[in-house]
Length: 339
Ligand code: DAH
Image 1 (cartoon, rainbow, N blue to C red):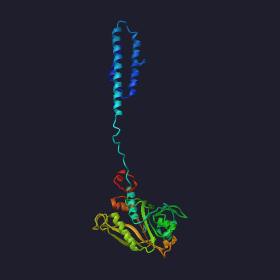
Image 2: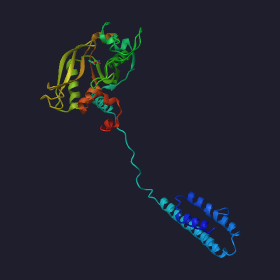
Image 3: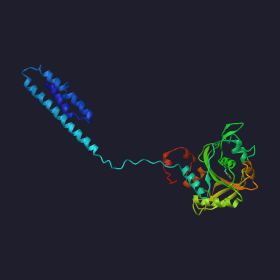
Image 4: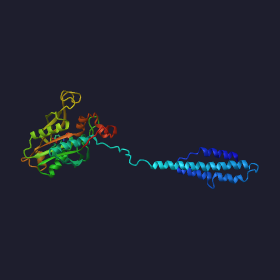
């Protein structure tokens, strides 16, 4: 009996309940009617009368110390709880971690906002297209290589349903449903059956521009693109137009901007030419206007198209196109924008 009392005494001294629930469990185990101490009092009746005095004293001490300990612990836990409820409710909360805009969205928004200031509206068209809007109405000859399975993702053949390979298809959709004056840009996602590498991807983004009205000239195109280049790349930027070929424009050109890194002196980025190619453009081919029921004797127009990935690479020094699509937050977090 004395051994049991001693063991319990040690247990009581060591007890350190953390919660009100644990404390209640301890109280029930020790000093409730069916607790271990009450049980010892039952057993006490059987104790040898010669030992009763000594055992009784120890047992009473045990009971008292158990009650005392439980009361003390209760006070302690109550005090702790009160302290918790006195927390400063006016203290600022944990800051929310904000996301950031995707670099391609930042640059697309900059481009649409620059043209917006020149009176261009924004329109969109479907990513799944037919042959007419992607090729035929844009004056592609029947045997043009872009119509090949090697270059284009076809969904169905005959009649051809495919993923658009450029946003020029939206030109056709807009001209089919409206008459000039038309002044709009068309941002969107395009698809080409290309091997994925640091420089090319099978999914990318373009912005197409279109202006059709009476007396629209190549000079208008050049002036608009010069303004655009300076807004996007900085005031001192120069442009140059090189003759080129696209089925849907005549004449056609490719536009270079003076290299933003070396300012035209020649560096790694511009491959020591001083120039960076950023878009294709030209005067809308009369065949294209006629395909959309726009009178090519009355109206002329210009068009241009550019890749957003490439321009973003030039603006931010991104070296690998695949980074745009990998969703690695270490890459994405580096971009901040108000737009
Ligand atoms: N559609 C062309 C491409 O994907 C880009 C382009 C070039 C669009 C010249 C135009 C243009 O509107 O006039 O490469």
